[in-house]
Length: 609
Ligand code: M6R
Image (cartoon, rainbow, N blue to C red; front, side, top):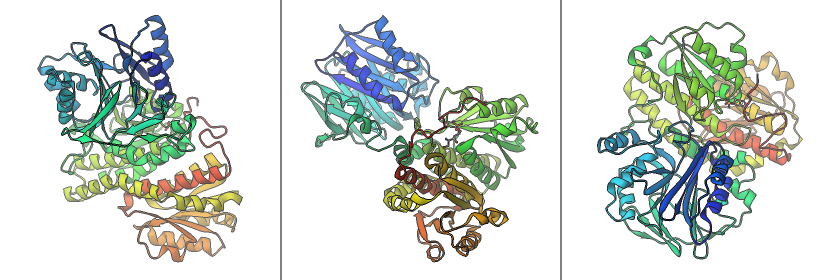
């Protein structure tokens, strides 16, 4: 997730671009840059770091012009650096591009372009666009952009500016957002509304597969085949603060609702076109190294640890490797047994958690191959690991982790399926069925989100509650832990996550009508056991809210309330079950008027021991 801004009009472009980038900094903030047409040249300024560093650079080397594009980056290909910052230019330095998204076939395109003499200056996938458009350019910028887009596989929001078409900006969208803002003799383009709100409330939302040509006096939109598109202009009613959160009240709610896209991005390019193979180029293990792995050790903290617990189930079940998992703050003090046959998987959204980093170093120093699963390219764990798999969730601003968690789960499933595939531990047909189920998860998540009002109503029951229990078994024991963590960290209601079978060894004493139980009871090997546990709670006058599958005709006979999730294979239910529990926690905390995005005593990234 990056932020894009473009401007064409009579005003000082630099001022508008910088202002817009600041409004989009929540979309990414590891580097920023802009390109402005100045006296017949493209003036490019870009800097690693926050937008203030770019502003400082512009003070030292000012630029002036009325047409320009800008970008604030959240790295996906290539670490944060001045060279990798956008805009990127073609060989002639006459055209500049900014991009948000992931180009899946960029390596093949880059090799082909380099073979034809194009000189690359960065490690990004984006730079391919600049050279590809240059290679197609024969006097018509629109035609060259469309030809380039036809060769690209992946997601993009793209804006192109060229000295050969000085009164034009060209933009295109495929799976990454772009809006057009319309003023008097001036046009804007941006990833999101906040970037243009100070100048206009008239916007057009570009759709997938569309290309927009912007001139000072208007915009023309076509599809890739050249068909003209006519679209009504929308008037934005939100204020600036709401606009930054996409109209949501809190970042947490926005991020919960971003999960279908985040999951889709995390899957992108990792499943072969025929749906039969998992490809994980980030996992740098040769076939010999893969077969030499004798065990897996997972290291993480908090929510990431819960993702690791699900990973243990997935890897053991599919790849038949023994998996040990440790809370990172404990691992370092117990002299763990780690050797060259160990694959250590370190999970961290931020990539900066101090205990997780210490665990990574311990595992690496003892000879393990370290695989980092992180959301932040260029973070400490990214730099220090042997292999890296990114969760493409985009920046997570709310302290309570939501979209990072479900994308971590997705990476765990992909890793387990990949290890199974490479080690030959499951029949091809069974793997293909699971891959098919994995691919449906983003749209199933969307289905759950469409029913969120029902969960909002359930949350009203928690207004008078001071304590709660979350129960799950098997692969959904971690779901119970995560559901409880979400509730307690943002609502400050005590919540205990427990393995349902353990309840009678202690926590059953907590049950009263005022201590509700949330029970994850989805179809699978432990379903009947969960029903028994629910009955045990009901027998003690407890109130049960169950998370169950669509079409389950039994559950409502035992539970007081049932939240339904779409059916999937049992192993993948934790992703879907997590979403209603996030919503439940959110609405409980909101009913109580809590500071949801920044709960008391907590920090987004715990960089001290
Ligand atoms: O950045 P990390 O994934 O390493 O962070 C780990 C935990 O601090 C984090 O998951 C924390 O538990 C969240 N606030 C939970 O919502």
